[in-house]
Length: 579
Image (cartoon, rainbow, N blue to C red):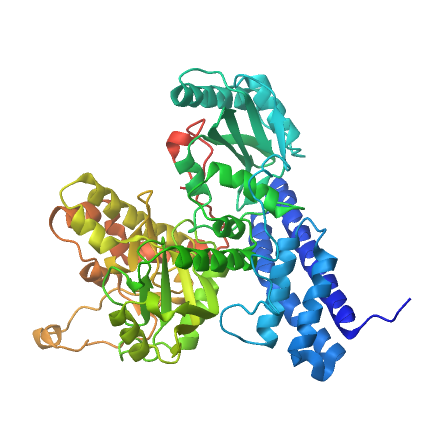
């Protein structure tokens, strides 16, 4: 046998490192179901954060091994091109080869920071054509039944393999079957269908487990999702979701990632894509915790969209921020954010602190209220696709991040997230209908749910919040975001005399993290009936007692959850300790 070449040894090192990464990923993921069965909510949260850090840690370790192994050859591009060829042959037969190629690309971009994609050393979409359609049933069970009956639902739940008993499996199955049949009749006109398909992997997130499925009738599909809770060692089916909108909210970009033990992720992506046609492949990967590969898919999708469209990037709607430049491509449902080079004096923060806040948001339970922004580096976009005004603005405010190289614009670092309607614009445009009232009320619930999750928005202006296509309010400006526990909520000291009250400066000392809730009302930006509505339902946000009580709950270690469905989806009125 011939001695392996340097490229062969290095490719084998990378392959073994990727194998370690995905094995550990799946090990952490499998623990989530075990923790759910033991009601170990804090353990699930710790595992979610640990899994987020796993890719970066193993990439760093792999680079250290390659540095020792290759020495000066580490930066030899022809050697990496040869390594890519060897690695391709090694991973081609894997069920997770799309993740393996992203792992390799993560290394090349560390060794050779470069703009765009270099097909000599990076894997591109053409290297691994991934057919998601047609794989839907590879990780699913098909129940050849014609109606949603309680016996079928009982079998579905038993097949999921929970090792903890249900408090009333028969009753849950009857209620779930009735709910599904009602929706089948409403959707198809009668209760008959061709089959019920259910994914084998159970999805776990926070305090709930989810069984994901669909009813098929010809080319038409009806989502079926069973939300299972654990009440002190006894399980119950808490809710049944039977619409694309409900399932889309379950997989929202404003929520943390699921745990699902997958040997071949693309099989589940195919199934989920059949239920959520408006979700991109990238978003589905990210929702399952594969955010690194999700970014790979997003970049490919963005480049494909740019090649097949003609509109230009423009300044995003809304009031310009003091810290970030925000722009969008009208035909593409995402926004792009860059950190400016300099901030005005009132913004007492730094670039490094802003980046750290975005990292912390990624590692924090977003409770359905924080937009998930993924960071990208060294992105190359044709200059012709930028509006002249926008490009001039970016070059003036963000020269450290944006540069023009011939016919291309190079963006060294940016954040990308789903586009939503700025709340201030939404309220103004819907001032004559109930949509504005709903948004204002939901904004208050957003602030309270974030607070319960130990998040203080800081800059509580309408312009920093947005409304999703489902009508939910979310927060997307993280300049001043911080843990509720880190702030000192104080009552405003009374003035000792008129001169103090009329003075331009405070008559009392104010520390950096002092917050005066009664002053927050000045920044709400609501008037008339909407202001009265907000104060009627959420006036407690302007009291010290509310915020100090929230601090005590957080300091006490209470693990809250906010379920991604409303009362209308629940089978019973009791049993949900979230919102």
